[in-house]
Image (cartoon, rainbow, N blue to C red; front, side, top):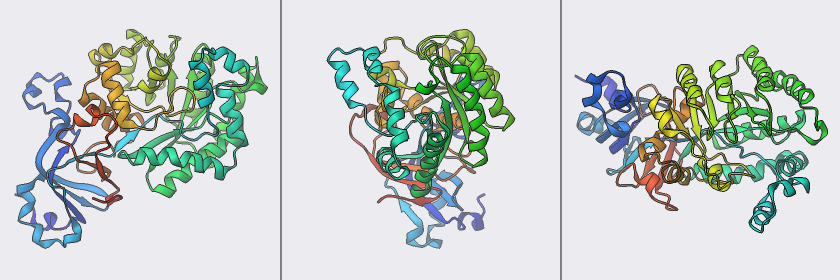
Length: 431
């Protein structure tokens, strides 16, 4: 029997809701369990119909059926109750891999490539990542904030309540600091969760040409400084033949470990040089891109509980043809997150909903997989155990959708059905 004092003590109650909880407590993901006895209890999306949510102190305090709360509703003021009229509630969306803080614009390169100019020629003329580094270094902190704010707002308007923002277009101490400061400022202004990631090991700056080891030494020296300033939540790197080797990234990861910072990695996008094995060795949060990931390294990711972050925006923009090994990731039960990878060069994408559609159409993921990859597994990829699920004890970060079923979020293209978002128990937009 539900306790009367508990059921009348919520700060806010959401009623008449259909909920995609993504909670194991409500049957999500049980079909992947080794316990065959659980098979009958499997429930897509962990969905609940005709349900309600009780919220207290910014947390989800109760989830149950509408019938369980109905008799207690007279105890609440009208302002404490949101009747969503059978619309759908999901956890707030989480964009777990972005580079949204950067200066400049590279649409000129996009146009040039379509006219037949090679990426190598563009780079030789000062384009590519160097162009973004130059523009980001030159931008004032106010200008950088203003440019990045537009990209963040586009994501928030589609139901995003948490986001990761990387540095990596500064490649010097002052500009890396500037980027991470802007990321923190964006989170403060819009009062959403921003996870900041230090990505100075992103590319070799022009002033370190042919001196990659010297540059990595600087990257390792800057990290404790920026961490001491409260600007770093995690550490990333680009481990590829065109970027940094596993041994160079290992040096960065050792510093991260000494500071008790979690690690993640851009790896296996263009080749397989063992980046995912490295991040698994350090029990990293995630390994991202992964088109060239081997099954042997998938097993290592499974053992270390490292999330595979799939980035269809870059695959689409680059017209790639090498699919990530989705079936092998499923086979070994590696959790898969999905993200925009918003960046100026290879994925100028500010729609997580479109990203979900791309994940289905390009990578053959299911609608349930891409929505889980934008909520519960995206939260895991950021180390946020209190987000990404509609479950008692989790943050009350929610999105409200005018849809017939959860699959609509991946199915529809260009139609934004969001009705509002709740962050830490507070509604942000008109309901």
